[in-house]
Image 1 (spheres, helix red, strand yellow):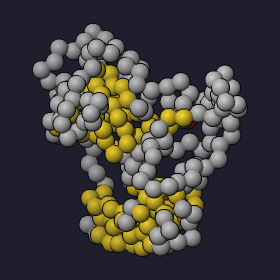
Image 2 (image 1 turned 135 degrees about the horizontal axis):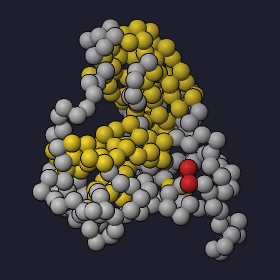
Image 3 (image 1 turned 60 degrees about the horizontal axis):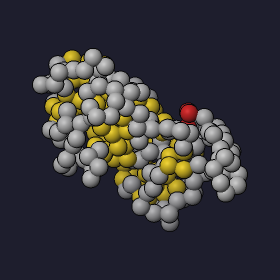
Length: 255
């Protein structure tokens, strides 16, 4: 859902919020969840004090394609569907990628790749990874940082990328239930020994809960319960601290 506020009831009285918290044409954007939710108040024409963003890496396998002189691009709801604004670079083995900052209010990213930089050279995708508009769709509601699958251009087939990524520090991480009332359970397993803790942030990016869990040994798996009954109803981000890179999940407090 894209929206903007108006100081009146006709175009010409609408706000023009900064690009740091909007997409194409200064529209605010939010993915509507499955239950009622009250969004935080925001100053007319301005961004929140803290703008929550996710780091999402888009990848496409261009094997068998003749690459356009204008390069490979991705367009989606995260950048206003601009076909020439987001260029990918060659990672290796015909895999192209770009890491983009996506507004935290976007819970499901829609996108498609282009072999060029204008509409007409975009892929047409059908199958489990796409919707009726042939846009790729990926649920990022529980994600703070993610490398999306490397889809083959124009298909839902995924290419397994090997030898191009760094080793992971975490071999187990889960947060449940995603719709909590009293307690949230976190399960964690580490590949390397670390001092870890958690932070819980609200939609405005404010830390509303913080805990230091101490040192966790390599290969050790453990679970902790976090009381969330005193948090207001709404969406939150749980983020692990003490680890390089983002390890996090989103959850909702409900009553």
